[in-house]
Length: 317
Image 1: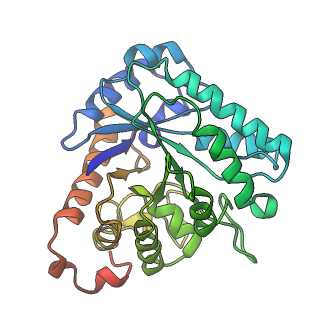
Image 2 (image 1 turned 30 degrees about the vertical axis):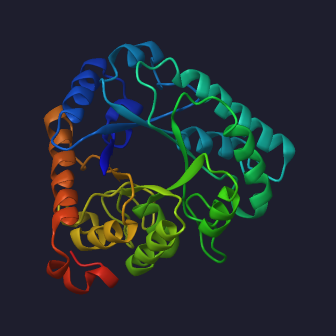
């Protein structure tokens, strides 16, 4: 199993641009023990400030690319935008954007190992058939060997606000039938935002693994209460509770252990955590990532007997 760390979630580069900080941060991040790849976003371009800077300085490592930041930007401007859209124009725009992304990615010195796709739009504006048609087109293109995977986000649940509100997992799996060129990726925190229960997240991971389509599982936290990282049930990339108890994160060593075991022989595990409030220097941000990596390793290495009932749920710590 390879480990990918989200560089953009922890980096300040996407809110304030400091090339010297970012160059050192990326180089030292990929040098951390056990890091096999970095996750970077596509934002309608390769970098929010300077594409050529990223192309010349991205570390020589495997890459996972997510299209979610751009998908959210476009969705806010046009609610019918998305790969699963029942609106022909909204779906065509999303497919065209992924073609632009594909052409951008070949400019990088390393072809991404995985490219993550997302099933906008929100609510009832999406369908399985529309998503399957989009996937059929997208997977027919030359991705130079990159694996394509749908990253599941929280679905729209009647009667309460949602963060993303994309298609349910069952619909995403249905759309993948007959599309062998694409797989599925889960994010623990986004599943927690949807399900509001750590036991249910473990069950969702197990169901995804049983489908045979699960490519990766990212460990990222969420909280049921407001806190220093933001509002309750926000997709704020909270850390493991053990590394910052103030966060209220439901992601713990035990809940991660349960999810990783449910994921079985998945190819990728990910870590996606924000900076701690107050992190300013490269050393501070790296220390935050390293502390969470240590808990992730412990979760994946702890004997089953040592976590007791946590394999069937629980939100300890």
